[in-house]
Image 1 (cartoon, protein in one colour):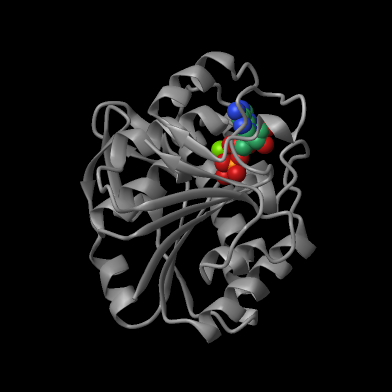
Image 2: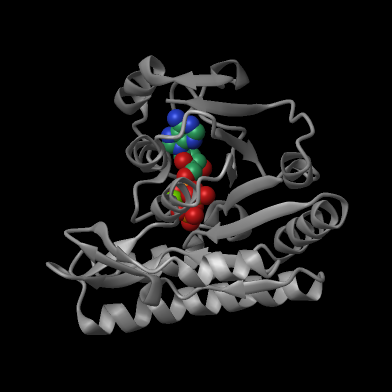
Length: 261
Ligand SMILES: Nc1ncnc2c1ncn2[C@@H]1O[C@H](COP(=O)(O)OP(=O)(O)OP(=O)(O)O)[C@@H](O)[C@H]1O
Ligand SMILES: [Mg+2]
């Protein structure tokens, strides 16, 4: 049985340089690729999506001072994005079921503290595709904190003991330096040594607005949560047609980064 957590980057399905801008054709194409993969293979799939130009944009207005109003507005933007994505998945015949982040995760000092995984486990047992998303959630010490899709994805993959964790992003993978000089800077297999190097050399965290730390945070969260040695972790460019389908059906992707940390 294939078990895959797929994080669909907000960088892919939205334009993060423009507030509330969906890349509708990209979303549609990705939904059709997921539907095709699910119709061909038996896959236990969990989807996670990020904030893109919805959550990140609203959150950036509050500059880390999360008031009750911030809690409501950031969540509202994320619900809107999630609803659009879910509707698109349903239209393509995928039995996607949104999992409310605020009811699943309670944080303590920004870290997962109480997590209610039962709805996700039940959904998977019934052949549904749970879809989670980054959001602002209750925090026992800080009142409210942002929980990134980049924390949710490795956290869920580890807790459910999945064997694959894939990141659909808007670049070919992780580069030795960013911005890269050419694709020669693309790292094919990223190990622990390279990671420290990247953390020093990535001056730009993300293109457009990103309140959760872009690529650097993605890697740090993987290191924090993934302790399962057999888990395959891959980042690839989902702006390239067919790559999501290829990833889900274990077909080769020419340019990508495999993360082994
Ligand atoms: N070393 C690096 N290699 C590759 N990309 C990098 C690197 N350093 C920074 N980046 C930036 O990280 C971006 C991807 O992270 P970003 O958080 O914007 O995407 P995302 O997680 O898909 O979006 P979201 O947070 O909305 O889900 C790339 O578009 C790139 O601009
Ligand atoms: Mg991000």
